[in-house]
Length: 200
Ligand code: ADP
Ligand code: 5GP
Image 1 (spheres, rainbow, N blue to C red):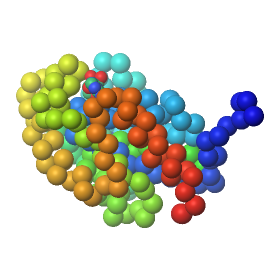
Image 2: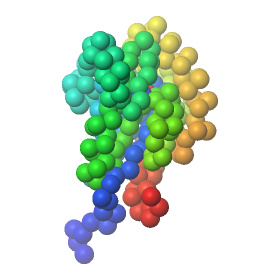
Image 3: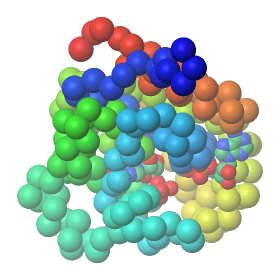
């Protein structure tokens, strides 16, 4: 039986996985690991008005667009959800996720709690996963070590984190991202279990 795949095969239509976390909890790191480990799992590339960070590539992490373009798309109804976060706009394209799901891929949405709540209202499908940092002190350390945000920005993100963490009860699963590889295993397990499910 060497070489035979034992993971559940892909279905005709994929499932939607909505992952939220306070900024700095490690959601991007975690999602990247799981995306490279599991076949048929695709990342939904959001649109944003924020500037690219060092190393970010257009259409890979985000599609970076101007505010007027974003507003035009939002008015046309191109987004399944969108939100203003720390002064910038972020939105999920309806067309992008629908195409991926229809091709049988599972789709990972990395969106904030406001966005997740909008998707919950609009779509019956979806598995909701919340990533928690081990503590607020550790969250601050991670944001500082990442060196992508100013002190003022970190302060804003920590303040937002407190209100976001209160929302975790609206999610189906909570993953504590303390030891990274353990958190990766839990996220993979949730996705694999969903694939094996016979419920729609
Ligand atoms: P988010 O996408 O949630 O804002 P990132 O994935 O950018 O967070 O992670 C924030 C920082 O914390 C990064 O520098 C990342 O390398 C680090 N990090 C992520 N997970 C862990 C972990 N389990 N233990 C220690 N550091 C981590
Ligand atoms: P960052 O600027 O650190 O990449 O992301 C900031 C926040 O925006 C994160 O909580 C991330 O999950 C969220 N985010 C990214 N894309 C989207 C999106 O399309 N919609 C919403 N609502 N949030 C998003």
